[in-house]
Structure formats: C-alpha cells, structure tokens
Length: 421
Image (cartoon, rainbow, N blue to C red; front, side, top):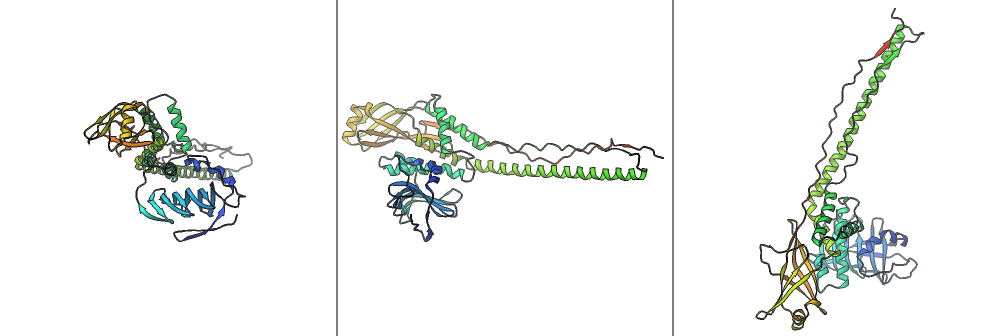
C-alpha cells in the first residue's frame, strides 16, 4: 500500500504501514473496543472499517480505527517527542472529543477538536461520560480508552512497575471470588495495589557484606635462598598482599557506593509515587468503576404531588441506605416507577474525594427506554453513603550504608628462616 503524507498542526511526516504481525503485540491497546473490530489486512487496497497500526516515523505512530484508508473513529496518535493524543478522529485528523498528553504522561489539553486543532477546551470525565444517558457507543469507547491511558500514564515513567490492565483485572477477579460485599472488595483491591505500589520490592538493596581479607603472610625460606634473598621475597609478598588488600577495600567501597546510588533512586521513586498516590488511587477507582458496579436495591419510591419530584430510597450492600430525588420526570416515567418499581434498572454514580472517600452521589434510573439521573437529597456536610478507602503508607526509606572496614589483622605472619646466621 502506498505511503501517504499526514498533516497535523503543521507537522508533515511520511507514513508507512507497520507489519500486521506487530498488531498481535498490541492487542491490549484495542481493549477499549465495545464490539469486535476486524484487524486491517496488509494486502488490502484500502483500510476500511478496521483496526490497524501505522508507522508515521521512527518514533511516531497511529493505533486505532480506519475508515476509507484514513484515521477515523477511536485512536491513539503518538508524537515523536513521546506525547500523544487519545480520542476521536475523522478524515485523518483529531475530530471530536480527545485528550493530549505530555511526554511524561501528564495532561496537556483536552476538549473538542476540529480539523486537528483544539476548538473548545473542557474537562472530559470518563466515568461521567460512561454513565451519561446521552452517551453513545463511541463515547463509551473513548471513556474506556482514557481510563486505560490514565493507568498507562503512570506506567510510562515506570511508576506502576510491571502492572497492566489485565493484571489489575485478574487481581480484582480473585478478590471478587471471595463473595464479599462490593465495598470490601474495593477496599481489598485498593489495599493490595496501593501497598504494592508504595512499598515495592527492595531487591538488590541489601547491605554489601564486609570484605574478606587474604590470610596473613606465611612464607618459608628455601634451601637455596640466602637470608637477604629471602627477606626480599618476603617484602615483595608483603607488598603484593597490601596491594590486594587495598584493591579489596576499594572494590568494597565502590560496591557500597553503587548500592547507595540504587538506594537513592529507590527512595526517590517511592517519594514520587507517594506524591502521585492520590492520582493513582483515583485512576484505580475509575478503572474499577468502569468494569464493576455494585447492585442497587430499591426499597421505596414515592411521589411528592406538590413538586412532582420522585423520592427514591436505595441501598448498596455494605453502605448506608441513601435517599435520592428525581426532578423533571415525565408522566410515563413516574407511572412505571410508582406502579412497577421492580422493573426499574438502577446503576450508582460515585465521586472520589481528595481525602480518599468514595461518595455515592447519584443513581441512573431506567424505565423502558427512558433514563434519568437522581441526585442525593443529603445536604452538606455530606453524611450519606461514603466508602472510606484504606490508608496506605509509603515504604520506609532505605538507609545509606557507610564504608566501615575492620582492620586488617596481619600480625600473625609466619616467616620461617632456615638459618638466621
């Protein structure tokens, strides 16, 4: 297939196809897809309605959906300097909602894009996007991709260690099999992941053991040696031993220095992880909420005839019961809610605070094809259903090792003269 010129914000780069075999290595990148998407075939004259990978330059590539041989749909555009854009495309350029990241994985700008340029800046909340009743399948795919990217943004600077989305899901699946209430599953998952993240293994940071010196000199005079020749040989042996001891001491000091450098890097990594703990915890929670929501049990649905508001009492196992108010509901919606409450489909909406609480703020209520959002009737300060997340602590810093060497005990030399006279 012929290469083509990609133009984005003045950037002109000659594009070439990657081998489709490499696509197999990037299967996880397509994990945001809500429905199966066929891979693009290398020998196809046009890439249309498929998922593919295209090299733009040595350090730049596009991974995502193609339509009529152009980037169209959901994709990732990785820039040469390491930054990237994750979002919606049309006609080969960012078009729709998307987020641009800096090379270090932090957010640069986000909002609505037109023709490859940011036209309207606003915050894209993946969870709110997923739960919105106006959300389209494309919106949900975008939200899943952004949640996955928030995890990868930390891994980009090796702040997650060898953690992948599949491993996170595997850990949560193991905990879920314990048949615990959903809040306890969340606590255990976060406790496991955050503890591992904030207190990583300290392999290779054990103190360097003290060196072993060579044994004291033990030399006997040969029958053909004069006393003077023997004394010279002993002195040479003493010098050689001293050189050996000095080398052992220097090597030990260098080993301690290297170990302390690694300890400093480890301590700096732990400090950086601690500074990003709230961000990582939020990313983990968003990851969980995108994959698992607790069942909501409705206990009562009543109508305030004066205001027309529906009042809904709901409960999640392990959390305190909560009261919600649904305003501006249509008559058909109210009829179903009051006469057939068992037919309502309810999903919860949560808010994560900086203090480390998961607040149950809203519920989405679906009756037939109608979906409305009810908000909590609890007034500030918030005392409703709140899930307090586990406290975690960073690993203790690894102490530096001092180079303290025991004296070389060479006083037990055995110098045997055959005949001193």
